[in-house]
Length: 274
Ligand SMILES: [Ca+2]
Ligand SMILES: [Ca+2]
Ligand SMILES: [Ca+2]
Image 1 (cartoon, protein in one colour):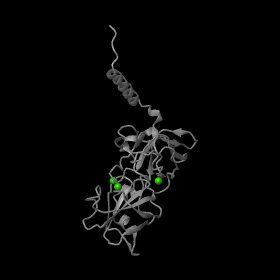
Image 2 (cartoon, protein in one colour):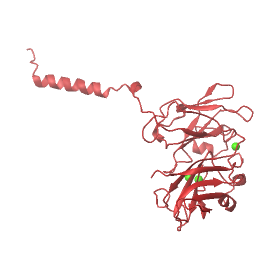
Image 3 (cartoon, protein in one colour):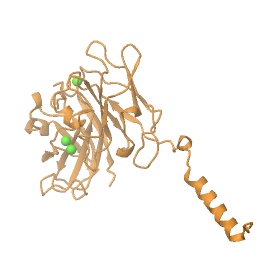
Image 4 (cartoon, helix red, strand yellow):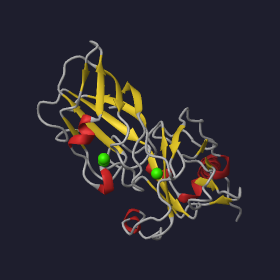
Protein backbone atom coordinates (compact mmCIF):
# COMPACT_ATOMS: atom_id res chain seq x y z
CA UNK A 1 0.00 0.00 0.00
CA UNK A 2 1.36 3.39 -0.91
CA UNK A 3 1.04 5.96 1.79
CA UNK A 4 -0.80 9.06 0.76
CA UNK A 5 1.08 12.25 1.48
CA UNK A 6 -1.50 14.51 2.96
CA UNK A 7 -1.18 18.30 3.07
CA UNK A 8 -0.99 17.99 6.85
CA UNK A 9 2.04 15.71 6.61
CA UNK A 10 3.73 18.07 4.18
CA UNK A 11 3.23 20.97 6.54
CA UNK A 12 4.61 18.87 9.39
CA UNK A 13 7.75 17.98 7.38
CA UNK A 14 8.21 21.62 6.42
CA UNK A 15 7.83 22.80 10.01
CA UNK A 16 10.27 20.17 11.28
CA UNK A 17 12.87 21.08 8.65
CA UNK A 18 12.32 24.74 9.38
CA UNK A 19 12.85 24.13 13.10
CA UNK A 20 15.97 22.15 12.36
CA UNK A 21 17.48 24.98 10.34
CA UNK A 22 16.55 27.43 13.06
CA UNK A 23 18.22 25.49 15.86
CA UNK A 24 21.43 24.61 14.01
CA UNK A 25 23.01 28.02 14.53
CA UNK A 26 26.47 28.65 13.13
CA UNK A 27 28.07 30.29 16.17
CA UNK A 28 31.13 31.37 14.15
CA UNK A 29 28.95 33.89 12.33
CA UNK A 30 27.60 35.59 15.48
CA UNK A 31 28.54 39.22 15.21
CA UNK A 32 28.35 41.71 18.02
CA UNK A 33 28.05 45.47 17.86
CA UNK A 34 31.34 47.12 18.74
CA UNK A 35 31.31 48.72 22.18
CA UNK A 36 32.29 52.37 22.49
CA UNK A 37 34.22 51.43 25.62
CA UNK A 38 37.95 52.03 26.01
CA UNK A 39 40.63 50.51 28.20
CA UNK A 40 41.31 53.19 30.81
CA UNK A 41 44.46 51.51 32.10
CA UNK A 42 46.46 48.29 32.21
CA UNK A 43 48.54 48.36 35.37
CA UNK A 44 51.54 46.10 35.91
CA UNK A 45 50.81 45.90 39.63
CA UNK A 46 52.93 43.00 40.89
CA UNK A 47 55.58 40.69 39.48
CA UNK A 48 55.34 38.26 42.44
CA UNK A 49 51.72 37.56 43.37
CA UNK A 50 51.17 36.61 47.04
CA UNK A 51 49.18 33.50 48.17
CA UNK A 52 45.67 35.15 48.23
CA UNK A 53 45.77 35.11 44.41
CA UNK A 54 45.03 31.38 44.46
CA UNK A 55 41.66 32.17 46.09
CA UNK A 56 40.85 35.08 43.74
CA UNK A 57 41.61 32.91 40.71
CA UNK A 58 40.08 29.76 42.20
CA UNK A 59 43.29 27.79 41.77
CA UNK A 60 43.91 28.81 38.14
CA UNK A 61 46.79 31.11 39.00
CA UNK A 62 49.97 30.41 40.92
CA UNK A 63 51.84 32.31 43.56
CA UNK A 64 54.76 34.17 41.97
CA UNK A 65 53.02 35.01 38.67
CA UNK A 66 52.42 38.60 37.54
CA UNK A 67 49.24 40.52 38.32
CA UNK A 68 47.78 43.13 35.98
CA UNK A 69 44.43 44.85 36.52
CA UNK A 70 42.89 46.07 33.24
CA UNK A 71 40.18 48.71 33.76
CA UNK A 72 37.51 49.46 31.16
CA UNK A 73 35.33 52.54 30.77
CA UNK A 74 32.24 50.26 30.80
CA UNK A 75 31.20 47.45 33.11
CA UNK A 76 31.96 43.91 31.92
CA UNK A 77 29.62 40.95 31.34
CA UNK A 78 31.16 38.33 33.66
CA UNK A 79 29.70 35.47 31.58
CA UNK A 80 31.87 36.44 28.60
CA UNK A 81 35.11 36.64 30.58
CA UNK A 82 37.79 33.98 30.06
CA UNK A 83 41.62 34.26 30.03
CA UNK A 84 41.61 33.58 26.26
CA UNK A 85 39.87 36.93 25.68
CA UNK A 86 43.22 38.64 26.32
CA UNK A 87 46.75 38.60 24.92
CA UNK A 88 49.62 40.33 26.67
CA UNK A 89 52.61 41.46 24.62
CA UNK A 90 55.79 40.70 26.56
CA UNK A 91 59.13 42.55 26.51
CA UNK A 92 60.45 40.38 23.63
CA UNK A 93 57.24 41.12 21.62
CA UNK A 94 55.85 37.60 21.96
CA UNK A 95 52.25 37.17 23.18
CA UNK A 96 51.24 35.55 26.47
CA UNK A 97 47.75 34.22 27.27
CA UNK A 98 46.79 34.94 30.88
CA UNK A 99 46.34 31.96 33.22
CA UNK A 100 43.44 33.71 34.96
CA UNK A 101 41.07 36.58 34.19
CA UNK A 102 38.63 37.54 36.93
CA UNK A 103 36.48 40.47 38.04
CA UNK A 104 37.41 39.59 41.64
CA UNK A 105 38.10 41.33 43.93
CA UNK A 106 36.30 44.35 42.32
CA UNK A 107 33.03 42.46 41.81
CA UNK A 108 30.49 44.52 43.74
CA UNK A 109 27.48 45.81 41.71
CA UNK A 110 28.91 49.30 41.06
CA UNK A 111 32.43 47.97 40.29
CA UNK A 112 32.71 45.16 37.67
CA UNK A 113 34.91 47.15 35.26
CA UNK A 114 38.37 45.94 36.31
CA UNK A 115 39.60 42.56 35.06
CA UNK A 116 42.51 41.12 37.03
CA UNK A 117 44.83 39.22 34.69
CA UNK A 118 47.52 36.90 36.02
CA UNK A 119 50.20 35.05 34.10
CA UNK A 120 53.82 35.02 32.99
CA UNK A 121 53.96 38.58 31.66
CA UNK A 122 57.48 39.68 32.59
CA UNK A 123 59.63 40.99 35.42
CA UNK A 124 60.96 44.31 36.66
CA UNK A 125 63.73 44.46 34.03
CA UNK A 126 61.62 43.01 31.19
CA UNK A 127 58.16 44.51 31.54
CA UNK A 128 55.18 43.75 29.29
CA UNK A 129 54.46 46.27 26.51
CA UNK A 130 50.76 46.05 25.89
CA UNK A 131 47.49 44.18 26.22
CA UNK A 132 44.84 43.45 23.61
CA UNK A 133 41.30 42.07 23.78
CA UNK A 134 41.45 39.25 21.21
CA UNK A 135 38.05 37.59 21.76
CA UNK A 136 34.43 38.61 22.16
CA UNK A 137 34.63 39.92 25.69
CA UNK A 138 31.35 41.81 26.13
CA UNK A 139 30.35 44.90 28.04
CA UNK A 140 27.12 44.80 30.09
CA UNK A 141 25.14 45.99 27.06
CA UNK A 142 26.29 42.91 25.13
CA UNK A 143 28.65 44.82 22.84
CA UNK A 144 32.06 43.40 22.02
CA UNK A 145 35.31 44.84 23.32
CA UNK A 146 37.36 42.84 20.81
CA UNK A 147 40.22 44.83 19.28
CA UNK A 148 40.74 47.21 22.20
CA UNK A 149 44.42 47.70 23.06
CA UNK A 150 46.41 49.60 25.62
CA UNK A 151 49.94 50.24 26.77
CA UNK A 152 50.94 49.30 30.31
CA UNK A 153 51.67 51.43 33.37
CA UNK A 154 55.08 50.17 34.56
CA UNK A 155 55.74 48.21 37.76
CA UNK A 156 57.59 51.05 39.48
CA UNK A 157 54.70 53.53 39.04
CA UNK A 158 52.16 54.38 41.73
CA UNK A 159 48.40 54.37 41.10
CA UNK A 160 46.40 57.20 39.49
CA UNK A 161 42.64 57.76 39.60
CA UNK A 162 40.94 56.69 36.35
CA UNK A 163 37.33 57.56 37.00
CA UNK A 164 35.33 59.51 39.61
CA UNK A 165 31.58 58.81 39.67
CA UNK A 166 29.02 60.74 41.70
CA UNK A 167 26.30 58.72 43.45
CA UNK A 168 23.39 59.29 45.76
CA UNK A 169 24.23 57.53 49.07
CA UNK A 170 20.95 55.57 48.85
CA UNK A 171 21.98 53.94 45.55
CA UNK A 172 21.67 50.14 45.61
CA UNK A 173 25.13 48.77 46.34
CA UNK A 174 26.20 51.83 48.35
CA UNK A 175 23.75 51.75 51.25
CA UNK A 176 25.51 51.38 54.59
CA UNK A 177 28.99 52.12 53.20
CA UNK A 178 29.25 55.77 54.27
CA UNK A 179 28.24 57.46 57.57
CA UNK A 180 24.49 58.28 57.91
CA UNK A 181 24.91 62.04 57.41
CA UNK A 182 26.49 61.53 53.94
CA UNK A 183 24.74 63.45 51.14
CA UNK A 184 26.93 62.53 48.11
CA UNK A 185 29.33 59.65 47.42
CA UNK A 186 32.29 59.91 45.04
CA UNK A 187 33.32 56.44 43.84
CA UNK A 188 36.99 56.58 42.85
CA UNK A 189 38.32 53.95 40.45
CA UNK A 190 42.11 53.59 40.78
CA UNK A 191 44.48 51.81 38.39
CA UNK A 192 45.18 49.12 40.97
CA UNK A 193 44.25 48.17 44.53
CA UNK A 194 45.05 50.87 47.09
CA UNK A 195 45.87 50.87 50.80
CA UNK A 196 47.84 53.02 53.18
CA UNK A 197 51.64 52.46 53.41
CA UNK A 198 52.77 48.80 53.75
CA UNK A 199 49.26 47.46 53.13
CA UNK A 200 47.77 49.35 56.09
CA UNK A 201 44.09 50.34 56.21
CA UNK A 202 42.98 53.64 54.67
CA UNK A 203 43.07 56.19 57.49
CA UNK A 204 43.22 59.91 58.33
CA UNK A 205 46.22 60.75 56.06
CA UNK A 206 44.41 59.26 53.03
CA UNK A 207 41.11 61.02 53.89
CA UNK A 208 42.86 64.38 54.21
CA UNK A 209 44.72 63.85 50.92
CA UNK A 210 41.38 63.97 49.03
CA UNK A 211 40.02 67.40 48.00
CA UNK A 212 36.67 67.76 46.25
CA UNK A 213 35.74 70.93 44.35
CA UNK A 214 32.03 71.78 44.56
CA UNK A 215 29.81 73.62 42.07
CA UNK A 216 29.67 76.62 44.47
CA UNK A 217 33.47 76.99 44.24
CA UNK A 218 34.21 75.58 47.70
CA UNK A 219 36.85 72.89 48.28
CA UNK A 220 35.98 70.22 50.84
CA UNK A 221 37.51 67.09 52.36
CA UNK A 222 35.39 63.92 52.62
CA UNK A 223 33.96 63.16 56.08
CA UNK A 224 35.07 59.52 55.60
CA UNK A 225 36.54 57.05 53.13
CA UNK A 226 34.62 53.79 52.66
CA UNK A 227 34.81 50.43 50.86
CA UNK A 228 38.26 49.80 52.31
CA UNK A 229 38.56 46.28 50.88
CA UNK A 230 41.40 44.96 48.73
CA UNK A 231 40.24 46.32 45.38
CA UNK A 232 40.80 49.47 43.29
CA UNK A 233 37.57 51.24 44.31
CA UNK A 234 37.31 53.74 47.19
CA UNK A 235 34.31 55.79 48.28
CA UNK A 236 34.74 59.38 49.41
CA UNK A 237 31.72 60.29 51.57
CA UNK A 238 30.69 63.97 51.40
CA UNK A 239 28.40 65.96 53.68
CA UNK A 240 27.65 68.99 51.48
CA UNK A 241 24.69 70.22 49.42
CA UNK A 242 26.48 71.76 46.43
CA UNK A 243 27.18 69.04 43.82
CA UNK A 244 30.77 67.76 43.56
CA UNK A 245 32.52 68.77 40.32
CA UNK A 246 36.05 67.35 40.49
CA UNK A 247 38.39 65.53 42.83
CA UNK A 248 42.13 65.96 43.42
CA UNK A 249 44.37 63.68 45.46
CA UNK A 250 47.72 64.81 46.83
CA UNK A 251 50.78 62.70 45.95
CA UNK A 252 52.15 60.08 48.32
CA UNK A 253 49.20 58.63 50.28
CA UNK A 254 47.54 55.76 48.40
CA UNK A 255 49.87 52.76 47.95
CA UNK A 256 49.60 49.93 45.40
CA UNK A 257 50.32 46.26 46.24
CA UNK A 258 54.02 46.87 45.42
CA UNK A 259 53.89 49.72 48.00
CA UNK A 260 54.43 52.46 45.39
CA UNK A 261 52.56 55.64 46.39
CA UNK A 262 50.24 57.62 44.10
CA UNK A 263 51.35 60.63 42.06
CA UNK A 264 49.17 63.76 42.34
CA UNK A 265 46.03 62.72 40.48
CA UNK A 266 42.63 64.22 39.67
CA UNK A 267 39.40 63.53 37.79
CA UNK A 268 36.25 65.38 36.71
CA UNK A 269 33.14 63.79 38.24
CA UNK A 270 30.68 61.97 36.01
CA UNK A 271 27.19 60.80 37.03
CA UNK A 272 27.33 57.20 38.31
CA UNK A 273 25.32 54.55 36.44
CA UNK A 274 22.49 53.40 38.64
CA1 LIG B 1 53.74 49.90 41.21
CA1 LIG C 1 34.84 46.91 46.81
CA1 LIG D 1 37.69 49.11 47.90
